Image 1: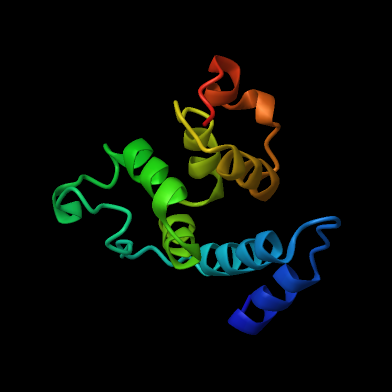
Image 2: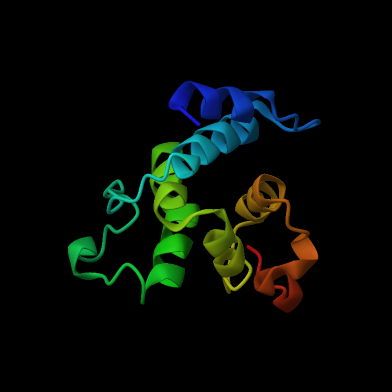
Amino acid sequence: MNRAGTLKKILTTNHTNQSPRIEESRVLVRYTHELGVRKPPVFSKGCFWDMDYEKLDLENSKNFIITRVVSHGGSSDEIELFAYYGWETIKEEVVKIRYLNKKILNYLSLLLDINKENFRCYKNGSIY
């Protein structure tokens, strides 16, 4: 399927009762991942302000990277994250996050179609 066909398929997928930001994120993320984009992600400096991101192993540190990006990143960081790791990997990793902001938890729950009760931070009461 070519790029236009992939984008059309994504845009015609119906997600009722979703906010515009969530729907926009779904479209951008699915589009980049379905195209098979697999280049090393480039995140904004705000995600890794206290360390040298270049020294991280993208596979062995994926939970840490995903946690930082969903907690401190913007929509362009989300796109980079999903394009590199893909939906399934991120779904597996976000439920393991120990601490999350309530708004981010709700956003991830809606974006990834995961019940809030499945998140580790929700079970442990580690929501701030």
